[in-house]
Image (tube, rainbow, N blue to C red; front, side):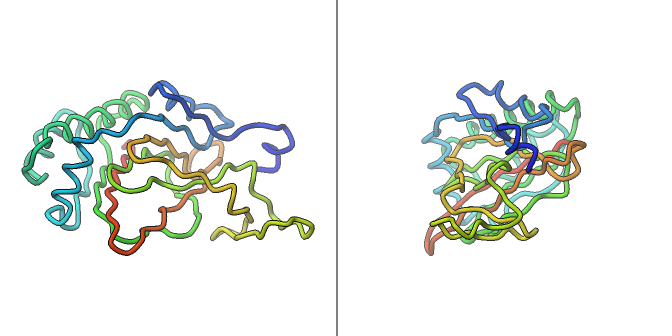
Length: 213
């Protein structure tokens, strides 16, 4: 992290094309974001079936049987086919990028922050996408410091692994933006520092995560 700051290197990239997600392979990137637009029909689907999702869906799925399994597990409602196609699209992109046939899929409805503290995951890489509510929050690695500067006019907060950050350095993905986050098991050890966004009382959030297997 210090080397990134000293070399004036940016630890993340974003763009309006899905090709930007491939930048995660770069040995200086910890986060890449596809800035795609919100799909109102899919958002309405999750708003309407939120309660019916129960605890959500979690498991390891093969790409070639994913659509049928999702059709069996997701509640019936308008735009269900669009939801299945979108999850399949993201799964197909991930498996093509990492040359795998299975994904660890998690689709969960949330009314509170699942992981409220900034942390790193002990995995190689993860795709995240929020269908309803605010997206995942993350910190540029080059903005972290091991000791807060006493002369700073802005207060510092601390991650769950002891590094410090300023609140105005927090980045938040929008709904439907697709993020690729490195974990600590990636060979360059540039794990993305991230957390679930705060969820106000009465708000709903639906999160999709995909791990290449």
